[in-house]
Image (tube, rainbow, N blue to C red; front, side):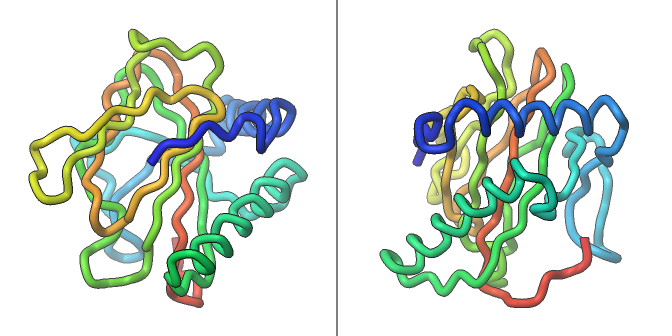
Length: 190
C-alpha cells in the first residue's frame, strides 16, 4: 500500500528530515548497509549498496517522526491485532548506481519484523532518476505488482515476511527512511 503523507507530516518536517539525512551523508556518518544482524551481518555490494544511519529519536525532527510511527503502530494493533511492541528505523542513502536486490525484510516464521514502512524524502523526483521500490507478488515472486517512485512524502507499507521487493538502481542521490514494526520487545544489537 502506498500513501501520500505530505499533508499529515507537513513540508517543514519532511524538509528537516531530508536535511538531516543529507548532512549525515555529507559527513560520512552513514555506514555501508549489510544483510543480517550482529555476528551474522554480511556486507555484499553485489546485493546491496546503500548507506544507512540508525535513528534514535534524539533530534527534534526524529522525535516528531517517532510520534507518527507510534500512531501507526498503535493503529495497526487496534485494527489488525498484530501485537506490535516497538519499531526501529534508519535513514538510507542511495548514490547513483546504488541498488538493493530482491529480498524480504524478515525471515519467514521469525515474527520479529512484521510490517515494513518506507518514507521518501526526495523533492522533484522523476521516473528517469530511477531508485524505484519494485514490489513483487508474494505467491509468484517474478510477477511485479507495482513500483513506487521515491517522491518526498510518499510512504509504502507492506508485510515484512511476505512481500518480496527491491530498490532499482538510482541515477541521482536518493534519500529515504525505513521503519520496521516488531513483535519482539528487546532491541537486538545492530
